[in-house]
Image (cartoon, rainbow, N blue to C red; front, side, top):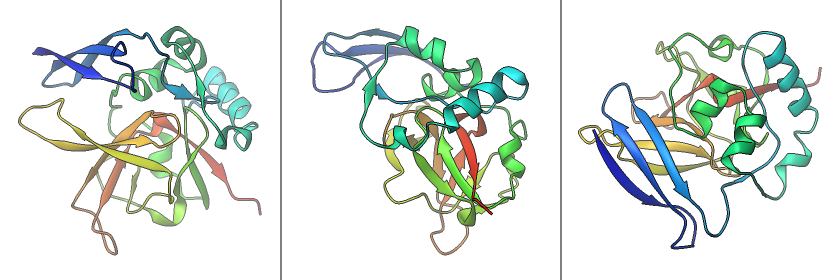
Length: 199
């Protein structure tokens, strides 16, 4: 367990500390921002129940307008906009329990979108059953994600997957996927929403 400094953005004042506990992964952020906050847009949630469903439908209705540009929100605003599970994953890089997301079994044709901003991240055609209990894909939508090195577990370096538009944590990518890429993008269902194609 250790405190690690990390920087975000271009300002030297934008510094945060994260408390890293090996397993389960826990990150506690203390952030001082002199130049601004992480950029985001409209919010999705993938929680069961009336509250989660209502938030998902509201955000899906404005998904298209959220695909352009970036907006900043404070951590307090994130708390208000995101359901608890989505906040823990997208903003604190948490991980949901395996087999806990309805999106793990989603079979319809459509687009998986970031729960933080509505940005398109995966298509149903690239989804496959990895047997891990998390929604898995072999390829993202072009420009949908960004990959960064995740050093939160010292003995297990991984590649983190974040939304390219709002920087929300989605999951990780591994080199044990199927052809044609050989990659397995292992995503948290609560970090995504799903928009079925029109019939």
